[in-house]
Length: 318
Image (tube, rainbow, N blue to C red; front, side, top):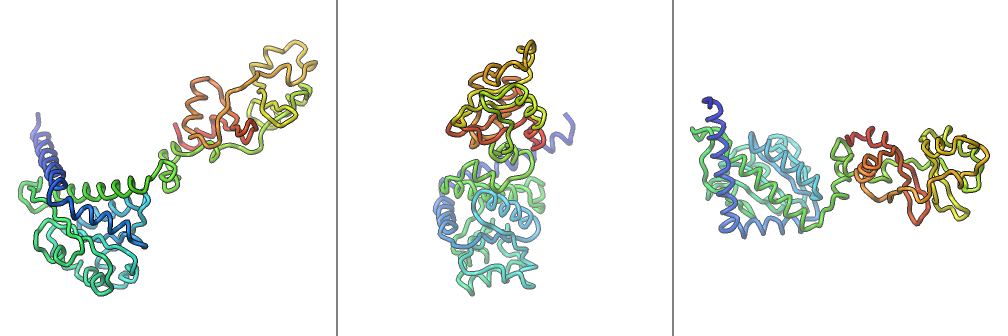
């Protein structure tokens, strides 16, 4: 095993130990302040303003993004920019979450002072007990003492990992309290593969459907299949209910004397359908499993749209 791999394993062990220590602290001295931090955020009418300098700032940006995407309005404010006008973003009704491993970072002084001046609740996260940040905070989250993975104690490694994990813990605790569902998650993640997986059939389906009446002649059905471009047509009864579907397989089976038949005589009865509210991923799985290319979305027995497998491909689901 190479020297590099040995170093990597040592770093991971060190940071894992730090995570174990913060998990243990949450069963002890961190329990009450963590609970208080969650309640403070839940009571806020505004946003969570996250701030931090240097490595703490990078971690803070990630925490703010995680909060915002899981139902807790949040925004990162750079402490240096805050001192030059961005403090106007931090208003009554907000909660400030300020990160600093030492708790003495000079750049955070103005944002801390701003929260004290305007009675904005402040949650401080730091690794030094009795530091200025924790003394000024309404809720002080003291990180356990843990060795940095660099071995010299000067490069933020274990401390930033613990801070990040604590931010995730806050976000998930808030998310579970708010009963945040995959549907809510989809609202904040409309793009990319994750957004596609959480898309519903109704988001991707086409309203302009290929449909013919059960008594329609096959000449009309063929024209509908050709015009709409889905390779199929649905068949409805006099009440508008979907009672069948005509595919290329049905056409081949009735090739002889095809134009002498009605749509109802050629169709496959009781076709596979799906609800418009179902996840598009479930529709894709059904199409792949049944080796079909289209599904009608049906509600109250009536067709509401049609989904083609190419719609799923274009959305980036596979």
